[in-house]
Length: 271
Image 1 (cartoon, rainbow, N blue to C red):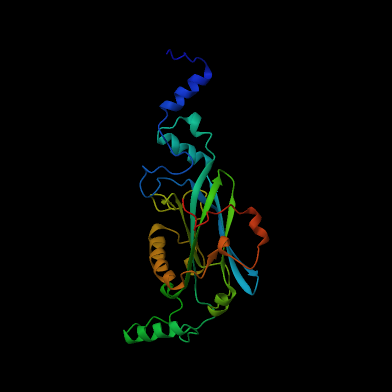
Image 2: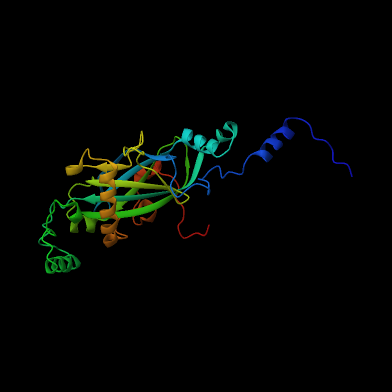
């Protein structure tokens, strides 16, 4: 049996595809390290907090993210894709957004806790000789909350807002008078690989607002301060696990601003 000879642009295109290295175009390739070299996705607007009235006075924190089309192309070309093929890739899948927010105690006197467990912690601190457990100025005594969600797919250069909520009872209990956090940082991951927030020199990547320091830490964004805050916040947020929640886990109300939000991965679904 003789195989017919195929000639023309279709054959040439097929040959080009056959010689192209296998690349997962829409997500970060497995060959990369646990951290991407440069950001493919950034927080493109300053992290914001506002009051939100729904079954009580909630607090809402907005994180606007954007995939960078040029960065996607550059990343794919660096992995062996031709510019022609890299330039048609416009989407990134499985973008995990993790938000940590911290509030300096404003209305509450740390020396007179309203929560059963907090009083026990103060007693333990006093017994161990720790004298600064009531000092509201120390970031170690701030109130931290953490939550995560995963965006199903994100189109390049198309900003999308992801909303996180602190319930009304927690706002009242913890005396969070100002919904805008004193400290906030966003960790972005693509297929489990963390997107860098800071450059090698310790400054924010251009156009990124992945870190917010207000109040006493305003204007002090650098690697040393971020590392310190992350270490303290990650430890403190364990005590408030599940308190703050992303919009896809909210029940009981619908926020009209969700119209500019992406679709989310159903965490319980198998992949």
